[in-house]
Length: 226
Length: 226
DNA sequence: CGGCGCCTTGAACCAAGTCAAGCTCTGTGG
DNA sequence: CCACAGAGCTTGACTTGGTTCAAGGCGCCG
Image 1 (tube, each protein chain N blue to C red):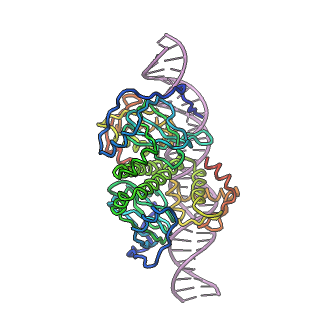
Image 2 (image 1 turned 135 degrees about the horizontal axis):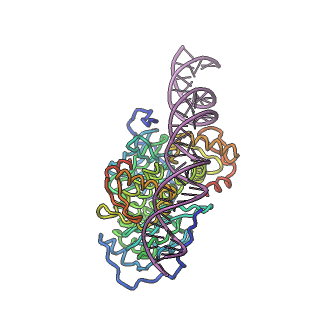
Image 3 (image 1 turned 180 degrees about the horizontal axis):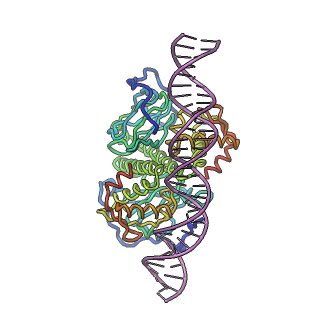
């Protein structure tokens, strides 16, 4: 059994003092960001815990976050990764359905749910943007569910393509370790490793180091993704 | 390889002439229903196809619907079942990410997306209800993703509990055949059958016939669900 | 340069898939 | 009312993809 206890002592999250870059997008998106407070979360520190009241939403400015659940017997299941630009914390009503942790040091915009609701009630563009973002999250979750009922190779291919879609160019920088990928794909760390190696041997990808994947044959990957 | 071709010749969907029961709920929910048109869909008939433009949303009045995707090699993956009261068709933006079919003869409320958007722009309660329903769908999709990375027993237990939560009492009437359950849980029809039999042998459930499950030991199921 | 976290590789094992009967409803026609 | 046919479900025997257990390698940081 692998342990997930944080390797960092839980340090106090610091309010970022520096200005953060304005992400491009429609006016509504900027309005949403305007009511957010930027905060820095250190690697492996908790953003929120499962079944805590969900009083905030979060937008990733930079870094990466994992949403996960620990089962009764200790297995961990990662439901989603959130990367720069993503809005998260949308799951469920009164309390969070998952816990969330920073995968790497991450700057997040913390948005009071109540404030955002009030803003949405006044501005229908904001309401629409909010709905649209939630719909996109839903589409991603369904996509993930489809991925999880495929073979190991297909899951890896799907994961690489998902990550590639969020990177510019052929080079993918993975913020998360193998164990996170395994828990996201419902596989073991060994199978993730083996499958990546096998994809490299087929010349579909290249693995210059363990935090980087270079696409060599995207078409082959898409075929695997069925 | 199993075939999914419809056993019914595709008959024209008929606009239901009879009145439909008003589902209870907040005023916003009733407003949403008011702009819907009731239609009857026969068993195994298509509601919409994947990659068709998503111009409508649907609310299930009665019956059941499956949202699915056929992969390149013919495997079918069911992303969700929608039962009485559910709003669906929320996935994605311009086009549907999944196809949808009636599992049994079903009465659906067909709602023009544009009309609903216009209504939401005018009435912030409607906008909020829409967001809230989409959030709930998202929570369910994430839950399903977690379920899919568990063992066969755990998936079955999760499925039975999911269905039980939507039924009054201990008796669950399954509208869908085993093949649908298999494709929803990412298992084979044989494994679904064997796992149900094994749950029955453990006296966790009872199977009076293949469309009915009676809960005998919900606690044991919840433990399996981890 | 040594230690530790993380990743890879190998070998044995097992849960779920595959293939192949056989059974049980349900509806239909004689 | 019974016989039959077909779809859908169950069960058994065998195979396999992925896990488990175990060892070894790599790279980063003190």
